[in-house]
Amino acid sequence: MTLQNVTDTYQQEVPPAPPKAKPVYDLKPPVDLTDPEVFSRHGGYTHEAFALMREKAPVMWHPEHAGAGFWAVTPYELVKKVELDPETYSSQRGGILMTYGLPDQPRHPLLHASSLNSLINLDRPYHTPLRMEHMQFFRQGFVAELRKRVDVYIGELLDAMEKQGPVVDMVEMFSAELPLFTLCEILGVPAADRPKLVHWMHFLETSQYQAQQEGLGNVTPEQIMTFMSEIQAMFEFGRHLLEERRREPKEDLLSAIANVKIDGKPLSPEFLDGSWLLIVFAGNDTTRNSLSGTMKLITEFPDVRQQLKAQPDLFPNFVHEAIRMVTPVTYMRRTATKDTELGGQKLAEGDKVVMYYPAANRDPAKFADPNRFDVTRENAKEHLSFGNGPHVCLGQRVANMQLEAAFRQILGRFPDAKWTGEMTLAPNNFVHAISSLMVDLGK
Figure 1 (cartoon, rainbow, N blue to C red):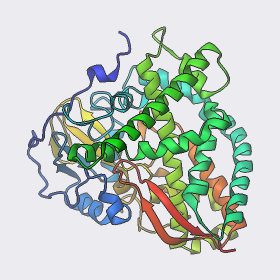
Figure 2: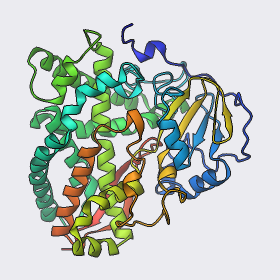
Figure 3: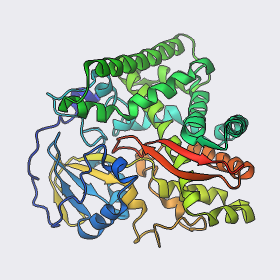
Figure 4: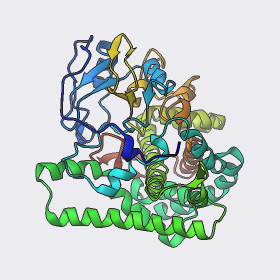
């Protein structure tokens, strides 16, 4: 048995259809979770809608425009149950995105294939050995050494913010820059090439919205050509680096990816493209949004500053609680491998099951007073923002490190820094995509 491309084996999308099993909970979706603009229109996650779903329909049927429909799972314990049972709820059978579009819909061929052919979409037996090849770059000792370089770079970013301030766009000057620096240090991307990744992230964040608008005829040919050429350039850059590492390996993550062998064979070009897309998006975008979201939080909950000043040992828990509250990834999807039951709802083989992390992280059955930013919360570390089980986020230790390092310095240098109230969210229902956050440094 050899590793096949997921694009050759996955369950293709089919047109909208009623659920195979009758819904036991009588609740229609309070918001359209398939709409990329659903959260940008509301200024963030619709926690009231998630609360209603948790209470009235913990496993709720949600129709789709570009697929058969899916079961939306919102309570903490049910989300965790799905995460911990990959035999019943597969990542590989249908991928981890809500939909990959109907076959006749417009979609970028490279983006489509690469969003499927990667580690995050694999089950056993291939998921574990491929994951292990990445592990050395996320271990505690490696991250501790990385922290030294991150601390220096944070100081440089804050110097630039202070020079331009007092009001700055935190995303542009800090949140987009720090994760990119850290990721490139791990990958081994040359410093001169790093600004390209910031540029390409904009196109990745809006790719779903772009495809939807193309289908509606709302995009000009020039816009389509620009999008296509930028995505092509991003993949060609990744291919160049990976091919270079196959010829001349170094002590970096790109070399590990380029030279990994599964069943004695190197990864296919399709899996190399997918690995490049996954590491660039997952290693960059989620931390960026956590950094910006945390600045918004400490503005909305100003007492946290004094707590951290009086008890600096609270910083690690502050990070866990901030990531719980921000929840940078909105959902992950699984596909049922057999007829089963979840939360009293029957599911059929092939059904799509979508886990909503913002809902799970605000579940009062797990987190008391869940909408309060409490840096002393004893179980804050049990949030599900990084997932759980075999697919728990590889980079969580790096993400935690960056957030702690960043806010130790930000609050040390700018104790009165606060969000001005101006924020822009990109149209995206997969991640909490903060594209601009204006901050007054207070000096």
